[in-house]
Amino acid sequence: MRVLHVYKTYFPETQGGLEEVIRQICLYTRPLGVESRILTLARNAHPAVIQLPEATVHRLPRQAEVASCGLSWPFFAAFREQAAWADVIHYHFPWPMADLAHLRHAPDRRSIVTYHADIVRQQGLLRLYRPLMNRFLARVDAVVATSDNYRRTSPVLQALGQQVQVIPIGLGDGSLPNPCPRRLHALQDRFGTDFLFFIGVLRYYKGLHILLQALAAHPDDAPTLVIAGTGPMEVRLHRQARRIGLNRIHFLGPIDEADKHALLHLCRAVVFPSHLRSEAFGVTLLEGAMHGKPLISTDIGTGTSYVNRDGHTGLVIPPDDPQALRRAMDTLYRDPVLARRLGEGARQRYLDHFTAPRMAQAYHRLYQGPSTDTMPTSSASPTDTQA
Image (cartoon, rainbow, N blue to C red; front, side):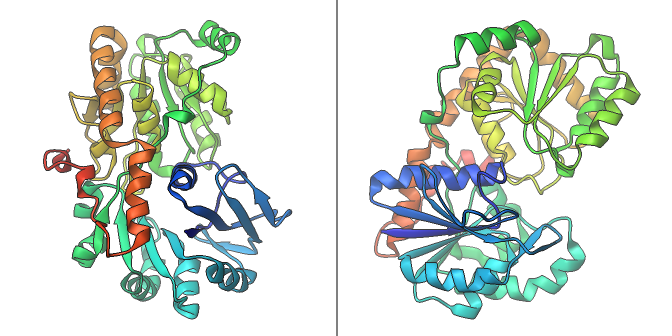
């Protein structure tokens, strides 16, 4: 079976949770007989074709960008060519270019959409885009939500009704290497083993400005915080930290996979303060759970509260609440026994619900079509859907 994944960005040019989801789907459907290609845009699209371990990546030049939507006229001809190769076209929403390509060329192929997130910020443009979006979602064969929380709270998914299936995101333990002892010791000497850790793209909806506000109260008694990643908010966050006078915060910038796993191995807990629905799932939470770390997240009605169950795998607090965030951080920072218990719960929940083979098997059934069991509702028990 040949599957074409379509999304606006991909590795190695961009690093993010959605790119990692595509990578995991490709890697773990391969043993099930799936050959994957990825069609995407890149600022520097040379070479046009690159071979990564998970898939062949075909890249078109990104000629312009409007409201985070990459534009490329050569994309349409490339889409026609790649769609002719594929048995299944797997779109990753949102990217209006993909909607337009599907509707213009209407390939006679099975098509599915993984609906990663609502469009939250660009409400004016959404009014213009909505007719195209609705036609596109109505034309594909299946729409997948990544959590039942998001399926129930997204107006778009609610309107689609029974067309929407739920396949939670999964990660493979194969991406959990043993940290290099030398690297581990160097990081431990620098940060210790009781720091709180955030990793991700520094975007407006990640709530990091709220995290710094939480540390501003009694900064000398604040937990040590390590922030890894880069992004549009980076300069602003550095300025905020200097203005407040925080001296127990470390901005690492971009880090490699080895350092990421070493820091996840060392940290006391993973803190993930995203406060807007633009954060639809939170792959970082899965990475923390995979490492057996307790999680701190906010209740924004999305997959973050499906991954992290309050009192079971970590602490869930109201969004945009610096005081509640500080209390949660202090609780896990000062109570290693509680942190260990919640971390064990997070690891078990990862094993029960969020492994990459589990996700891949569900997508493989969906790729095969309606003649098989394509309703992977077993991914979430009735209790879990209320998480």
